[in-house]
Length: 582
Ligand code: PEP
Ligand code: MG
Image (cartoon, protein in one colour):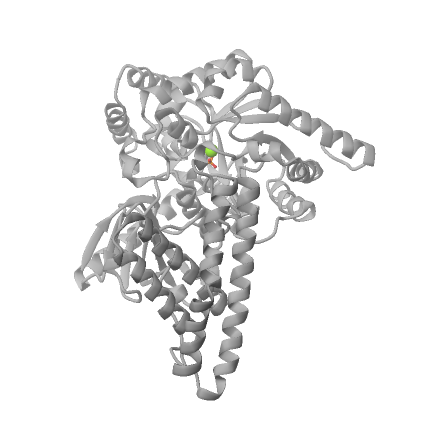
């Protein structure tokens, strides 16, 4: 039995067989073919080779266009390697003479070449070996006719283990059979972690290297409450975890009974408690827990986990579904926050990732550089707005120019709809995420030009503290209790108050009951949280009085380091709601 520990990102306990991604998908099913099938096999190899070359050539074209000639050269080198007549002849020779299957022959020859490079013992050649492994992967993918996302084809429950799951892969997980997952990389507020919460399955990220300890198929335990992963547990351990699985379910059931009660403090102040959603189906998770609306709809997930862009009708349909089901409760639709780690399926495979993606072309920057994409989304949102109470929110706004440009595009779309006589709601409020320090510092200027703010602490923390939210190596430095962050939040709240616009927090910080008193004490009266956290946050709100929350916030503001602030807040939560201290 081996026990490893990572970052717990979605609660609950899952027990089941391990499925390792990245090994399973390229398993070679047949080593040999019959003698009379060799020519068919050679033809199969040639077809896969042709498709692989086309794919690499397309990557070369895209790289040249978007990144420049030096990046395109990488793909050109791949093309030259794979088209090398000696290499192709050797693979075909193994199929013809030794009756190897195309997969076995390709893998054997390519790995032999890679080994030669590896043994030359210099960094340059070691990288060429990595190039050959990359080519092998592509070729096998075409020969086997499946992609990594093919885990959508599962037929029985599994716990997925992977070095990394991209947000699009996570979005594509088969929810019926994937009962939990654990990854070697990732941080507390990485999008993969947030998605695990949306899927409502136990998950752990940032475990560090552990896949080499596992063969696949053995029983494992993922404890999304403590962050523990147990490989090949013994009987007493299994019994203990089965018990804690039961306890977790009964604790959750008890909290669910709060759904009919309002989020109101013990001294009668009503707090708006909204849900954050990624998929339209999550509206049900919000409603069954008594949410006051949707405070953040991450629409980019419509794009992730699929090959083609959703057109205006597909978006209209998704937005209308969410808006109508919320029956006049507010729905804050955030425009596309693509880029960084949230790349649609096609671009993750094209090698198009930016060198420094968190500071690159992401979010509102993508929309403003691609106006047809942006306008299509705005048309769909505005058309759907007739079904209920909609608000539009822009992500990652970092300058007033950007905000003004985005608002101008909304006016253009409104004009188009007006001219075409297409119905839309007349007064849709327009707000912005405050998730870049520049926006927080200029909050007063922004407050004069928007209808509401929503503070995105997930990004605000990473940009304020220069800590990648998805990197486990710096996870200890990533803290919602950092005094610098608290000062920025206080400044944003003051600006909102001065210009009388609503302000909420929709980052993961608001889903942690440890921060509820602090946020209310700082003056917030609206929080948007992961749907499964609604009952806990409601309980924390109902146990508090505002003057007491204000005292807690005042005391926290005198502390100088995040660890002291977090410890202090944990201690205060222990006094009011001991059962919520994990
Ligand atoms: C945030 O950054 O806090 C936020 C809510 O946006 P996302 O997590 O989607 O980046
Ligand atoms: Mg963000």
